[in-house]
Length: 380
Image 1 (spheres, rainbow, N blue to C red):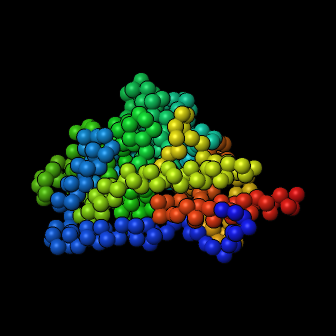
Image 2 (image 1 turned 60 degrees about the horizontal axis):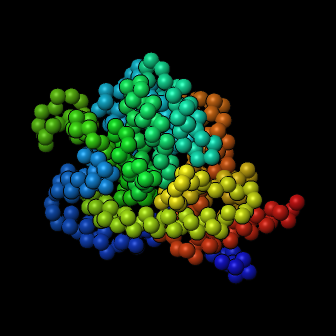
Image 3 (image 1 turned 90 degrees about the horizontal axis):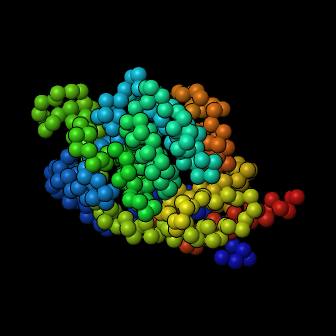
């Protein structure tokens, strides 16, 4: 887009779920009607079919639909017997849910710093954090990039630890070594509406090729029952993916390959148009890899807050992932120990991104960023 033609009044929302819905509205509404007419709304045929289809997509043997991505993590910990007295290594730069799920089961999250550019967990720092009480390492796939799974797999195998994928940002990600969900002992997915594979409400899944762990999660998600209203050998709760969400997700899973291609194209468009802006850091690519199917397109700028205000004045909404990082929350109180994560959090700007965006809207965002850059130079 030529800056001379840029309309400063043209707005681009950070996330437009109505536009996302309109992309497959007819099929989604058919799924809603199908479930409504079935008379079965919890743990029925739609959930069973989605679990089988999603497990296959992830290259795993089992998938268990649960109430949210946070529940998925907590249920993995509980199924593995992780609780009070145990430690779980987690990256400092992630959503609060990663740390909260560890603490929720009574275990202690042990934060480690991250790669300064990508925000992904630093495998060497993770290795240094292993202690006598360590039971697991959580590898967070961030914004559409996979964590360094080969290095983490070597680490966890050496110490006999569980390797758990927090794959809430990676439904469509495969960097040539297998899709998200196929690398760890178990993986937690979120289907929150803003995710690449999103439902119409909360939802999540545990994915694993460990049949015993998957069966334990099935019991824990529904009062400890091994069958519907059967005996409960242990305590369980209520965290079930419902039939409506499963039906919607089945429809959207069938289109996920197409959506992956759309997200790659939008990322390339951003990178091509922003690559020459001084002071703006672009999300790094994996070595030897093409543009990933980003979940969020996160850039960095030393004057993050000024840039965000200037973009909003031009009608472009942005967000921040994540500031404050979990260790700075009052619940955990570990500030100042993670300089790379702190720096990234202070500079990160999440630009509008999603399959609902048009190429023209990407150009509007890029034109606004270019105008902001020009305005900053003019004051020098």
